[in-house]
Amino acid sequence: MNQIIECVPNFSEGRRADVLDEIVNAMLTTGVMLLDREMDASHNRAVVTIAGEPDAVAEAAFRGCQRAAQLIDLETHRGEHPRMGATDVIPFIPIRNVTMDECVALARRVGERIGRELEIPVYLYERAATRPERRDLAYVRRGEYETIRAEIATQSERAPDFGPRRVGKAGAVAVGARPFLIAYNVNLDTRDVQIAKDIAKITREKGGGLPSVKALGFALEDQGIVQVSMNLTDFNVTGMLTAFQHVRAEAEKRGVRVLGSELVGLVPLEALAQIAREALQLEGFSSRQVVEVKLAEAGNA
Amino acid sequence: MNQIIECVPNFSEGRRADVLDEIVNAMLTTGVMLLDREMDASHNRAVVTIAGEPDAVAEAAFRGCQRAAQLIDLETHRGEHPRMGATDVIPFIPIRNVTMDECVALARRVGERIGRELEIPVYLYERAATRPERRDLAYVRRGEYETIRAEIATQSERAPDFGPRRVGKAGAVAVGARPFLIAYNVNLDTRDVQIAKDIAKITREKGGGLPSVKALGFALEDQGIVQVSMNLTDFNVTGMLTAFQHVRAEAEKRGVRVLGSELVGLVPLEALAQIAREALQLEGFSSRQVVEVKLAEAGNA
Image (cartoon, rainbow over all chains, first blue to last red):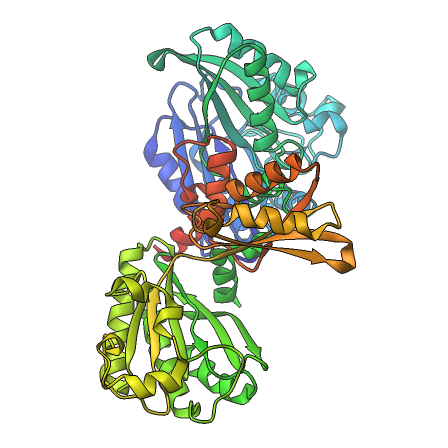
């Protein structure tokens, strides 16, 4: 529990479980924990979540990319999800005692190595981007594998940050750094999905709402309620408490009661500490004051 | 990070640091972490906080008690704090994946062993008490070492739960189980200490306020503000958010603004999870959703 980062590489394989097994096995070196793995057959894509000390996670990401390049052929790959490489994206995410700058440096180091040793073109994206437009993954991946293959040698805006100006069967990979993404939903006591859609619209950053928040409104038909489903893309900018209070206030304006909220997947401890700081006006609080953290750090010392 | 308990033995030695060193060294066996140690010369008393797996902590508590009995003589001990033994109290406290019942069972097991192997009389107290009146440590310790020495052989209400009906130079020890105690303060933007005292009075359980809350009002002279200082003796009954909101509402009634709050010392992760559950109406949340916890548990598996 000294320095912890997370890495969520996406691989262009959502159907052959044995292929994903081989890629995951290549990544699980000492000091790296597998937190999650998910395959989607229609997307033909896998999302793997690992975490651990930065150097170990960097090594794991490289090895996963190397193995995927051996096992996945973009010439024959088809799926609903946009993709440009066997390993499509590699984001590094600070969790504990690590800065975003350190994750950016790590992304560049891993990207350089992938370019040099695997001869795969690498685009740095999000916080690691070297050009403003490349912060946006959708821009980097525009036209997908087939277009990049056609344009990379000739179009200057397709020049990779690392690796050759040619694409093989492993395609290209986006390597970057970003904050932890919190998937957070608020459930409303109404059957009127328009209310959830309206609240989502004014809650999300694009609608002039909360910064670093994406939001959609859904009906949960089986429960007869609706949901404002959010991605908090940088909880240091907008955290769970702010998002919850915003949605609740908007629901109340519309005479609708909040039934509850739910967190999908994981959160860093720091996101819980943030709730305590905000809800209690808690001053000087450090997550080192959590018994379990203090114990884990004492155990490592 | 499987099962974790805390133990906070109090020793009747607040002046000789080398004596406390020897006691602490005796306790620090494999799997036990020292979280804190404090000596108070005028109290002539030391408070040691350790944590770890239940069996390891039980062994450590026994060894500390054994060493204290060799090094501390109650016949010559004087201090402001009431005391009845070289090791005065041994509370076991559930932190993670441990029930209160398990801590009660542990207290009884350690108490039995202290009585049998060290021939020190043991009174079970708080949640481990075998008689209702012995839940109260002050009752168990009434009259201190000197009175217990005089009465233990003859008075039935002085009969120990374990060990002999006679007191040696190591005195007697109270062994028990209790919830984690959270020391939590709320600061108010006024110089009028009576406001803090009034709010404390109606906040504490004894004044008909919040259950499992002790509270006092203080002036923080140097800052020109006042403070409601609380002990939350069972945060599952009254947690930090409830205590904060209660004090804030009472302050607002009196036209006084809350400046902030502060947590003294440590809290279990579960107390942070509780704040999130309450402040966000968060449903189905488990502290296993915290990345660091998931990592630590994966590391142990």
